Image 1: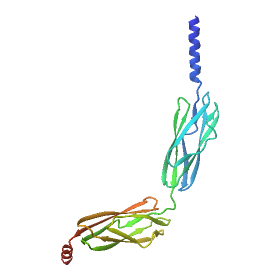
Image 2: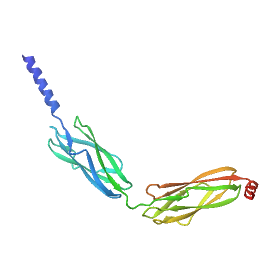
Image 3: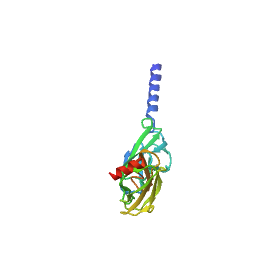
Image 4: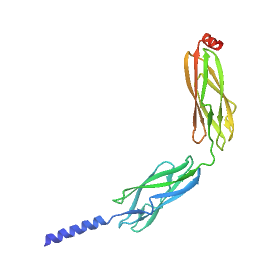
Length: 238
């Protein structure tokens, strides 16, 4: 009889120990911020309740790029106590539908890691855009040691001024810009100067870095065929 009482007592103690634990329940694990203009900040809250029987501890919160978890009011919550995780989403650089996630780690045995999501639509109203016409410059046959030029246009199809930040090119080509800024709806003429330095097919890429929203690095392909002067003269005569 004594052994039975002891066994029952141990079983009840274990049951109480298992049932006495923290738990967390969120009002929603997905928060939608609707539509915002690019550059604006969305302030969001993930509300929760400690539905367990022990103190809930928020151990750590990690977020993906583009959103920042602001400081919690506190990290310990008594049974039945409510709280929230404040989140700021910085929309600069985003466009269209956005989905970001946050991982919350707690001392709740059944919910040690909880993945929260925030979503919404970012509307890009004002931006700079770049368009090259053409995006391939064909110089044709060029005599060895000779120089030639050809032009192309940089168009800004956006609503903000387009700024040329950097131009990367090889020693054979030298771009000459009529300016370094292009207004909305305007075009900038670029004269590409080429000097034939070695025989055979020539291919290089002119890389233009700008503040364009969707295409910050635009590439122009440049090709030519370098021949002996006599070959080029003969071909031109024919």
